[in-house]
Structure formats: structure tokens, C-alpha cells
Image (tube, rainbow, N blue to C red; front, side, top):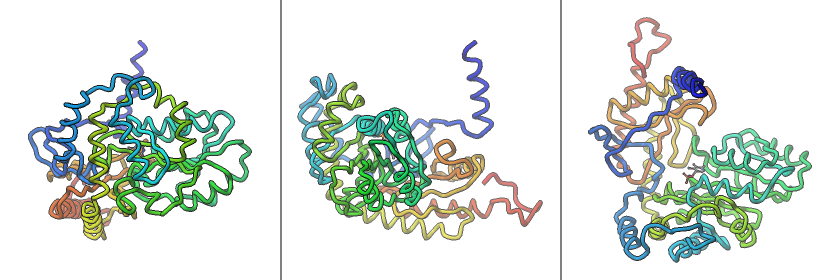
Length: 401
Ligand SMILES: *Cc1c(COP(=O)(O)O)cnc(C)c1O
């Protein structure tokens, strides 16, 4: 039967330690999660500012539901564009200092919208090798030549741009790399885009709300000028604590997107209550310097606390603090050891990250307390001492850390 092969492949996934398992939460998104009756400290979410369960957002949703109902009923371009959506787009554009913004239902869809609307067959997309899956899929959907350059390697990118004869060129990058937490060299990328008359599309899923003055994101962090060729995508399900995404930039680019982007046109507009929650979230982000300062203090505390462990902590000034373990099974085993100690940190394996770089992706939130960070540090230090050391040979304690 046609499905027999799936069993073989599923078994293979299990053998490679690549099976994904979902856990059902009996608690809202926050620094603690209740699973199977156990309360865990969670370092898994992208709720970097701790807004996902904020009372002001809950109140905004309740009020908006009473005023606007729940469903939007149609696509934005038919009859689903309600006043809260319009206001959100205007406020987002003003917040990031661009002429216009469009709101999308998810970041995945926003990414699928941008590149394929700007380039097509016979054009070329130049993409960082560590880009998020949604950007890879966007390049596929565009059907342009998909040229991937080594992570952050500007010289190689410049060579590729120079030797390529495509009429339209587009550089595609994460601003903050989602599994590494490091920043793309955005000023240099913009320079290359200028030099080779290319578009530069920046996915700021992890910088928006966290980096730059007022949390306006990675472009603001680097103080980049609002060039028409520079297109910003930001997601609203991470630091903004709700869901959805936006694309912001030059009014001509945004008008073209609204006219032609299939993931904008052929989908029902998300609920107006989501837009209302996001309006409140934007206010909290703008006024969120205390949250961001607390988050930065937690990041420094974690990095200090984990210095000298056998695992490498990737240099990162963002809320994403990955600890490289290496083998898939070792990463999973370490995550299990932490779970036993009441700490929930996801093990990230290929194909999400390159083979041999399985890791714990520790993500911090302004909602965490110093005590919670200290608990994680203590547990990881304990696991490190239990780790079988090759030098000690047979005498080493048997432990799956
Ligand atoms: C999470 C993420 C997305 C997708 O955004 P969603 O709103 O979750 O669909 C896109 N790009 C990057 C870099 C992300 O981390």
C-alpha cells in the first residue's frame, strides 16, 4: 500500500533521534508551564517580553470581541479589512518609521509573500545559509535561482552578486538568526544591495520588540536609513506576544504586495480581536524599556553562569542563547535530564540546524526571574559534572547527560 513506506521512514526518524513530540500545556504561555500535572520552568517560548498573557492584552481582546465580533469573514481585499486591521497597519508603519505596512496572518505567510512577489523565474535570490525555513520556502516559491552563501560571509556574497547576470537580484536574510541568536551584518548587506541594485529583505522575527531604541527592531539597532530597496518583515507572535506579522517599506513596494501577494490576497483576514491585542502590545513594546533592560540583565546572568561548561554557548546578545551539544541523542538526553530537574529547554536537531550541531535552544523572557535563571545554571552545571568523561574511562558515572 502507498502508506507502507511511511512506517519505514517514521521508524528511521526514531532511529536517528529525530522524532518530534508535542507536549500539551495546562497553563498559558509564561515562564512556568504545567504539563501532566507538573510545574516546570520553561525556556522554550519566543515570548521575549512576557506579553503573551498580559492582562492589558486580554482586556483588549475582550473589548474588541464585544465591539467587532470574532471573525473577519473574508480576505483583506474583499471585505475582511476592519478598522482595527487598518489602524494596526498604520501604527506599525509609524513605529518602524516606514511609509506603509501590511499585516499578515503569520510570519511564514509574510515571507512567502515578499520574495515571490518581487522576483521570479530567471531572477536570483541570495540567501544566508542559516535562514529560517520560511525564507527557504519563499525562495522555492519564487522559482528564482536560489543561491545560498555561507553564514554571514559578505565576501562570498559580493562575489556571487558580481558574477550573477540575473536582471533582478534579491538578498534575503534573518536579522537575528533563529537558532543561533546572532545578528546579520545588516549595514554591510544594505551596502551590497546598493552596489548591485538588489532588494534587501530582512526578517526581524527575533529582533522586533527586543532590539533597538523602543524595541523598534534590528534596523533601528543598526540605525539603517529607510531605503526603498530595504523591506522589513517582523513577526508579532514572538516579542509582541500575539500572532501575525507585518511587512513594512516604501509605499510602492507595499502597494505592489497588496495587489499581487497571494498569501495576502487568498486567505481570510485574521480576527479583528488579534489586531486589537496587537495595538495594545505595540504600546507596551514602545514603553517596554524596563522589560528590555531586565531581559538584558538575565542574558548577562545566564552567560556568566554558564561560562566554563563543556558545551559551547554561541555568542549572542539576544534572548536566544543556544548551547551547542553536538549529537542528536546527547542533546535530547540533556534536555531530559533538565526536565527531571523541573526545567524545560527544547533540544533542537537537524534538519532545523546543521548535522552535528544539535543544541539546547535556551530562550529567555523578561517574564523570567533571576531565581529561574539561577535554577537553570545550577542544573546545567550539575549535568556537566555527571557527564561521562573519556579521560576517566570505566570509572566515569553512567549517565545520559
Ligand atoms: C518564527 C519565525 C518565522 C515565522 O513566523 P510565524 O509568525 O511564527 O509564522 C519567520 N521567520 C523567522 C526567522 C522566525 O523565527
